[in-house]
Image 1 (cartoon, rainbow, N blue to C red):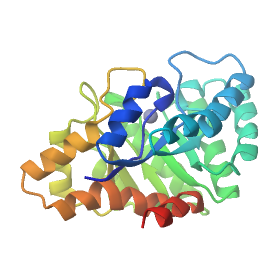
Image 2 (image 1 turned 45 degrees about the vertical axis):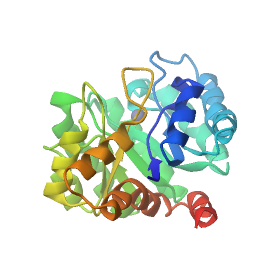
Image 3 (image 1 turned 90 degrees about the horizontal axis):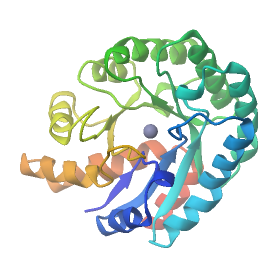
Image 4 (image 1 turned 120 degrees about the vertical axis):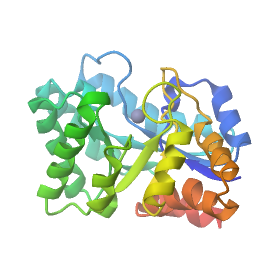
Length: 272
Ligand SMILES: [Zn+2]
């Protein structure tokens, strides 16, 4: 089995997890910028985090033969302070030339507040000005449907944004349809407690097809399973999906989406 882990917060994980990912057939791990579990007090805190994502973490992954990529932003959970968010967004352009950066993410909404929307628009503008891919976090539970709708509106209202260069992550049964119908990619996050189980993800694949879908573990500092993607692949096989169909979902699809970023395309060429 070969696969790409397109969404994992490795700064929160122990080194053994890199070992397990590599042993399970992972070819590359991609890390969106995220909330640390506490609010950072200054833009300098984000500067250090961006250095960790672009310099330290790729070295840690490389010890296990794993390519490490990242996405940069101030995440929606810390977007209430618009002034701080503006300072952080202005730090990002100088990191965009780092060889492992894939784009702007995970941006989006958390509580669907006005300030979060303002910061989302800042990020979309940043991505458009620098021709970056976009990875979007959608809110949890009761806020998800409305939040996803608001996010799609922001993206569609900016004429510079191409939906095929944006992935809307953490979709569930009630949001996947609107994401795919609008031409965006959809990400399914496999969590043991919230979001989506492997079995539910397979149900969605069987209902919506697998053209613009990927699965990820989004493993972070909370309860999560770093090998959730290969486990879901086993569930797909158990339910009769061919090895080629599984390879498409867990390897070729993320490679196709991420390959739109020249930094990622270079790795794909090395693997062939
Ligand atoms: Zn995440």
